[in-house]
Image 1 (cartoon, rainbow, N blue to C red):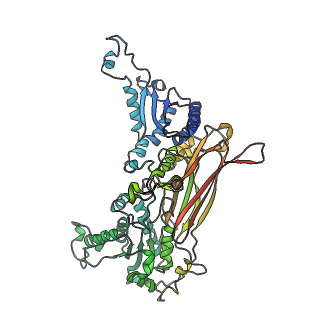
Image 2 (cartoon, rainbow, N blue to C red):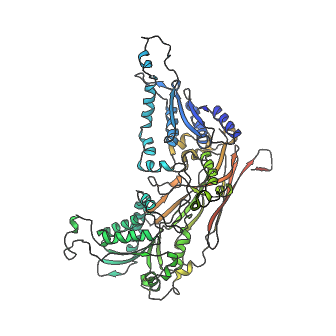
Image 3 (cartoon, rainbow, N blue to C red):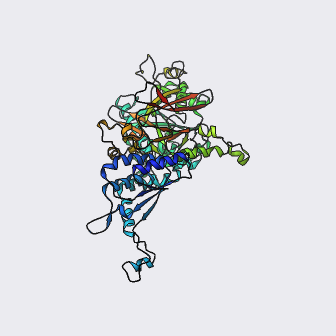
Length: 612
């Protein structure tokens, strides 16, 4: 359906789509057919934000009448249309087609007339307009959104629903590790966090001096697997930068194939054995001469193949639990999921603390992580969630397996790189987890070399014995959606575009949107979950990773949002409020989420609210 870029036509298309129950068989081609009044730009941006999410936008057509002419007579677009181009193609540029039309040469022109030779060869006479659009597409802001390395890597995953990874229950494949280890930001932030933690510990004299210049740090490394090698390499780099620190690293990994790979690195990589890489001049010489050479058996890394929940039965880890001086000073974990806790990071880290392997003043990296959620409009994601009902419930049985079913499909959260989606409100906090759990009524001891035996005298283990990780959050997204801030949030993945949000701001005091100036009716198809994690916070600095739009870590692609679908989409009238309830529940062997939503409209002159 060709939909001209005006509020009237966008409303009419929304009505048509509603009459068709949002069918994915009905799509639209946006049509820029005339010059744009700059005063209409804010409302048009908000209306387009809704249409991109719920309108099945397939293409964009530019009529020759929408172009202006520059001083040299070549076509150009006005500032308003240029801004629209950046917004639309920045959101859908990797999947949307482009058409230039209008004002074509008359094929009935007699031979020899102006332009006849070009027409005879099949030319459209719209080459200059197309070249100008290509010029706009090649501008740095769009290149930074669409053509970066992470942009190219994530293209196959656009709007493709995936089941969340379960590293605690499943053994991940090597290619999964390899993909995530290419993230340039994640491991840099982890390295910064470790460096800050070590610097603070040295400054506070937490480690026992050995001689005049060296200190000893016993450091526990416990992860769920992904990116394991990258974090260990970062820790080695940090060890080389602190000349007064000798780190002992215990790497705990439950995946047998990952354990073999880590042990092979320990046996073959010089950097894992207090040495340098091959051909490094610094590797020439001996320890006595100040050289840094590979010495077999001198590695500071100990690879332990063990499920952390069974650590008490492992000879080495059990010995660390019984010897208070050998317990961990720092625990580094990489169990964060798209929603922060959906890969069971709280249960895993609580288990580490309960087993008594941590010192009373142990530092956890990450220190805390917060789950956020926001309403999203995406007919594409909702349709994809419905399609999951036809997938075999047990993939190992193939076609013989029973289908997943509609109820199970719509009650499952999915990891997705949202693309044809629109976040309709600023994300709000659901809950927060912090590690390790503090010791009540006790202060950290001055002497870390306590010689008490077992866990009986370990307050840290006792502090984790009665931990409740079930949660509930009731959130109200007040006011009519979309807000100008949500326009800047785009598809719900990526940093907020403050310039776009400011342009979409209504001409009202405080930027409130009311029923009198509502542009188009929004439809909510579910919620997008994200997280913000403080890896380590020192008195002077902090290291943070986040996929929440308000604090997004630009360049990081290890996590995509978590999509919570609604069985039935919710239409949001002007001035209404979207309420969301979400629970994190658990029993002896499972952890799951439950969620529901409602739309509340308070009508003027009435004492009762209308609820959908």
